[in-house]
Image (cartoon, rainbow, N blue to C red; front, side, top):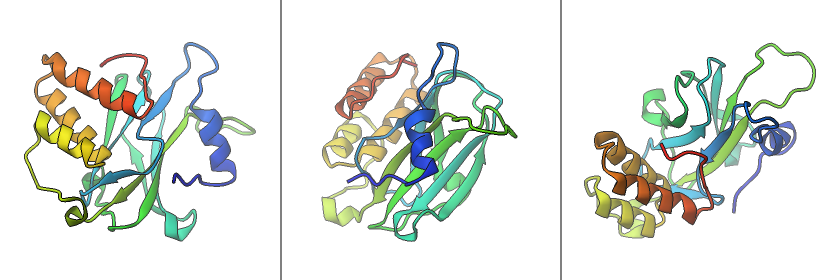
Length: 195
């Protein structure tokens, strides 16, 4: 079950990621619409951005047990090109506890210091770290077979991270991009471009 953060943030999540005009920045969480699983202490999360921006990009991680109080708040580097953006939790010394659901939020403050009502682009996902023994996880190297094993085992975030690692290592191999498209379609995500 996906937990939505109440109040103002929920409104931003519903409205903020939907561009009103063709030239507006669009964000998409690279996450399932349910709780995505990982066995990694500090997994890699992804979001998609439709265009480069110099606007501040804020990442927030909230422990579902602690209400809306953030576990981590990080100002990310502004993306210099459109496409997939990785949030490597290890880079920010963020460690997930096993058995705890976390909501992650990315907000692009396209009008920093704006007064009055405005809806910045915002996306979110939910992640939970599970005990590897509870799912017969074998710590295998990242390859296409590992992606399939991770996905079948419900380790959506680990499958996506491995797949993006394969694409970065061999960008000319179209089979990795096709596999990523299939994985995204399984959770209802269809991105505007195939980068």
